[in-house]
Amino acid sequence: MPEQPDRNRGLSAAELMQKRAAEGAARKEALQVVERWNAERSPLWSPTIRCAVVAGTPWLDVYCPGCRTSRAIDIRTFDLHPLASVGSLVLGFRCSWCPGSAPMPVLTGLHAAPPAARCSKIMPMEFL
Ligand SMILES: [Zn+2]
Image 1 (cartoon, rainbow, N blue to C red):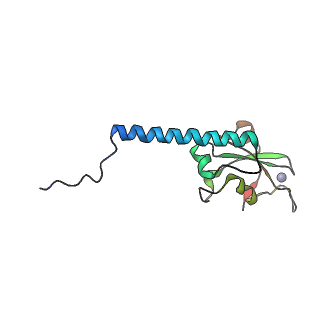
Image 2 (spheres, rainbow, N blue to C red):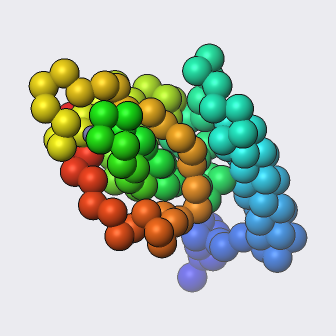
Image 3 (tube, rainbow, N blue to C red):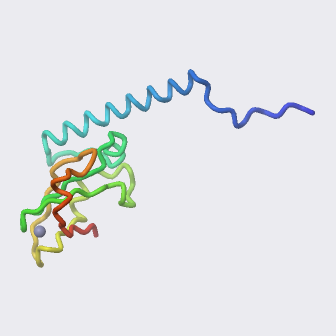
């Protein structure tokens, strides 16, 4: 019987270590971008959705200046292109507690998990 080509060969230990090192470096780099954005809250730029997910910080804090409530939203739940900027998400948020001409919500940071204190507040922020 002729030998089958090894199409389904798994990664060698060295390849696996190299892959994990590359993933670790990407995560570290992405986390630096997220931490910089969280510190600056710059209106000029924001991380991509992919960057936030790779950094392990998919929870976006959104603040409504109208009713002064905040909510943490898991951006992994949106069906958007991974290269879309996190900042562009603000255009789709609307606070349903604030009537009609509600002020535009403010994105206040990306985090690894929703803070427990904020989990108890229920803010009906919708993404359109
Ligand atoms: Zn509101």
